[in-house]
Image (cartoon, rainbow, N blue to C red; front, side, top):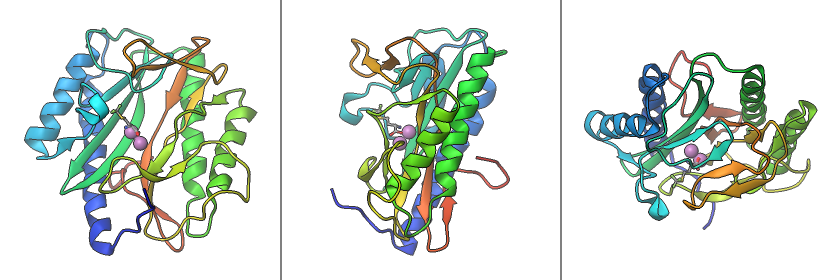
Length: 255
Ligand code: MF3
Ligand code: CO
Ligand code: CO
């Protein structure tokens, strides 16, 4: 699929969808406590998106995904399916929200600590957040995707973490996953040049150990092969002539 350049009207709709996705993460935070199941978190988010926001949870039935959000715990890298798993003190969990409003998608995820995290959990969570921020900082018209991927990879590896290669950020708009693919590793001066009006996600998956992954038998949940902890943060970003606008951050909030 070709890269799409959004009109001003489309950008406004992306902004609305982005803010709704961010609002779901804000809403769910107080529910992420020891004893809650990931299935309960899914149900709360689903009901909020549908009944309060009047929006659609994009993951539900997307290529057969059975739930409305993704919940990836500890060594789960991404696409964890909510279910009967009970969160316990010391767990770290990525909650990934994608909503569709007025035909446009907003996609964002955050890490949550359940009780007090281990030093290692805190570290990989912080490094993955810094990686995302370093990628976002570089976004403006004219920058090349390889420059962004390189900045992310260098930061992860400098901190003795690794970058998952098999999954990446993406263009986003009317479709959940549009071109281009936004790799979180790469070489400076390579790849597509970004242009104003593109909307993309940056969502590095960073492992505390080796970068290799494995797929669980449910055919969705991705885990680290060495069972090391993994962390991910994601925002949807508009490319502008002079820089960028993060569409999935609420006014006054930090990334
Ligand atoms: N939200 C994920 C992303 O950031 C995609 C989830 S696809 C699903 O691209 F089917 F697992 F929901
Ligand atoms: Co995404
Ligand atoms: Co996502």
